[in-house]
Image 1 (spheres, helix red, strand yellow):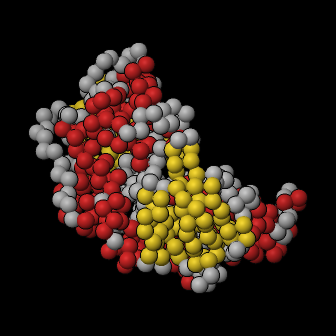
Image 2 (cartoon, rainbow, N blue to C red):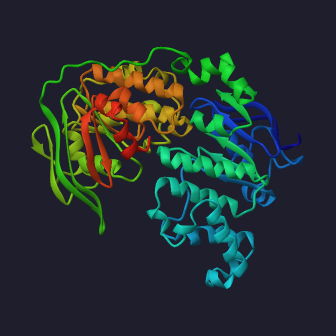
Image 3 (tube, rainbow, N blue to C red):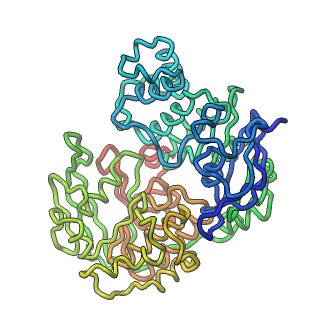
Length: 500
């Protein structure tokens, strides 16, 4: 079978860091190929080399036997290469139809008339509607894109890529951050695109269910190099893949055990009937929860139900309009964020927020520069014991870290503020199985140090591994409050609120 795109000895370095190392591969036309590998393996860098966002230091890229190594990204789009990104890229203030119309008009070379109504371009109008129907967004065409759920926004991004009529569609973690129901819809969409016969799909994905259900062939990267390539069955049976990518957690090692700490009964955090708004839109409705000293609590729910908003309320980033938030007995709902942090609450946002131009060590040392932070329990050496991977990359700048390394660094930086309560927003999102196992082990050790945690996540399996108790949010309100083991056993509640 002919290769639609192939590489020869592709290499890319950033300073002294080798991101892609001598990679030679072929992607057969008409197939679905998945690229997998642990965080930092070079997957996104390889995609950026294929799509022209980066130029290799060495090696070449061929598209249908034409050398496109030096071709621009826009030139590659015109040749038939489309892509979506790891972080959703849409126009949030435009309607769904307008989002798709912009690249559709550009592809039809009608952007000079962009001030005219879309209805004036009947063929483009019909094509936009056809694409929206294909991705399952036809009924949402007139909705503002920023109001879509996370899963629908990801499908909209695929619609944007389809407007250029690609013959090769590259998708970077297309199901990241989706709940089970959204993931099912995404799989159905990707499956229909694969069966259409008009597209070759290249997918980067951490979700192994997605990979093994869709891919005809799988490429495994590790530390920038090609580790293995083969059919899904061959990759499943490859011992090097099990050891290096999937890790011992998948190969049969015992599960991480939660630290069994005796709860002292003292409430460290009490949120009582808070209402929170974004403009005129109410995001939280009388939300109440409690966290006791020494325990781990999970805040679960689908995307868009208010998990992040709840953490931001506690941290003072989105203060509640009504209600009370008490930390160690003190009302903090009207305090600014820096004042709340100074009282002992650490916050790790879902987008990590590390400083890209600072090294790992410099990022970790930042809290020590803040005057109100006393010399406390956590040091760089202690953080490195919790996250051994960070000890190896102390001099590497933040922009060269993998997603998993950035996650570790953001947690480590929060620990350096010496908190007594740690808020974690979607800590498991986008992590490979091996890195997820490392994170579970780290959280177990953090808990052994006596730190209290409140974890907002939609991964109920991850929550089950770390939490004593759980709350479920649904439509901005608390729908469940109980022991984690009781929730785990209640399949009806799980199905109703988490679509498991």
